[in-house]
Length: 448
View 1 (cartoon, rainbow, N blue to C red):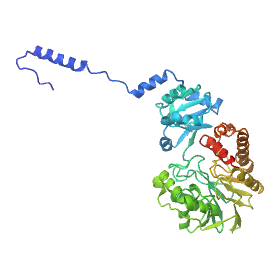
View 2 (view 1 turned 90 degrees about the vertical axis):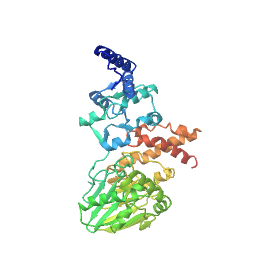
View 3 (view 1 turned 135 degrees about the vertical axis):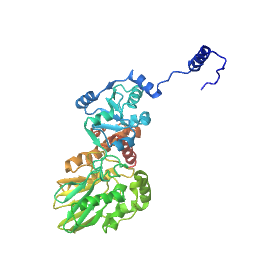
View 4 (view 1 turned 90 degrees about the horizontal axis):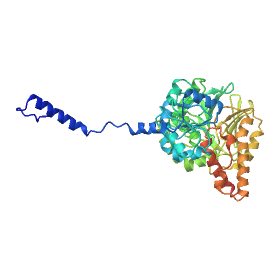
């Protein structure tokens, strides 16, 4: 408080002095400026096209192939548990938009709708895409929060929020069940449940196909099994040496189950197991507790037959597949084949550096020879042989033919990236894997 007033000043003089002080004190104080982010949104809205919920619904109905770009952070999506249901949907965070957009949207004329949670980042992202030359970009101004409040269609990040499983087991036949994993990447929120965890109940025990990504996920699967039967789990078969197939093995061994894998899968575990475990621990954090790397109790080379409770289980290595040691399980009485990663649909298959695509095509003929009526693939819902052939063998044959043409014409790996894979673009993980697959097939065929 000002203490300059002289006791000899008149009241009027004091008033004038105080008025002068306040006028001079605030005259040079700048006006309150608006938030720079808010100003940027105002400027963006002058140039971008905004649409509301009704308009977005209309656009998705008229053109289901519109590219929906969610610029929220991945942990936001996981926390909320869902994103807008659309055929073409990808999460590219605002901070990585300029770097990643080219891998997901090839043509600058592609119809694009950008959205975030509450319309703060999406206007800026829309403007950025326009500045980069994308000519058909719109901003969903209501944001995901509004879409969710209106209970409009969403894809869930986790279908079983009360379980570590992404989804609870579904009945496939009278005694065969499968917990269908998410057809996207394994994350903390889905506990790494991005493959199918299947089991068969018999009068003498339970057969499980895939141990799960970690100890706690295996325990969650066992909890669901125990809701259906009092029979113990006697066998756990590992489709290969990938983390989501084998890292839960120590839980099952503690329950007295015998863990079975192909001899090549064992070799992979011995070589890369610790690295796979460490990578899982980084991603699953507290959900990784009690998980240890252990090795299968039994391995085989070509075929292993187990008779239990009136069911015959033929565990088969058909030959080269998408990774070393891929095996499948055939139930001849039911004409049901659990293919593991030998067959795909609903999501694009991954091609690894050591994937033998030519050998996989030859292995496929042995799968077809079984005349299976029911297929439980490694990822995605149960289906039939025609469906998985389209997205496994047919995809491999197509890509090998196109890469062969590139090689015959003296082309490079960059030319392989230009191969048209659009007929498979509706599959989950297409944007993550299509270009990678083309490059890896090219590099392997160079030396065939």
